[in-house]
Amino acid sequence: MRLRGDKLFNLVVIFEIKKGQNQAFLQVINTVIENTLKESGNLQYELSLDEADPQKYFLYEKYQDRKAYELHTQQHYLQNMRASLAEVLAKPAEVLRGNSVS
Image (cartoon, rainbow, N blue to C red):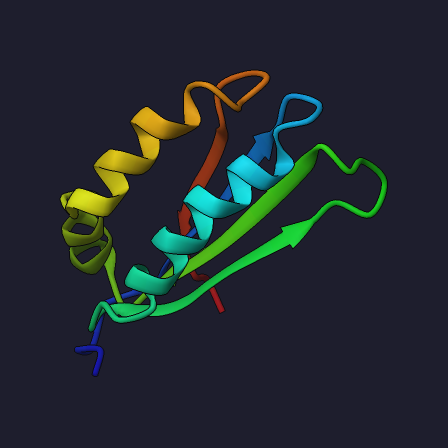
C-alpha cells in the first residue's frame, strides 16, 4: 500500500539484441521476470517484442515506489542478468525512469 505522497515508480528498458541471440536473451530475461514478479514492491514487469524490429524488446516495470525499485536493483538475479546480457546486446540498454503523474 502506498502512503500519501508516495508515487509509483516506472521504468521502460529497451534492449537491442544481436542477430541470432534472441533465444539466449529470452532465457536470461525470463529468469529475471519470474523472480522480479515475486518481489513485494513490484507491480508489473512485462516484456514486449517491438513489432517493427525483431531484435528489439522493451521491458515495462512498475514499482510501488522508488524504494521498492532500489531494493530490486540489489537482487542477485539482476546482477547476474547484467553480466549475462553483455554477450547478447548489440548496444547498452536504454533506460527511461520516472514517477507516475496521473
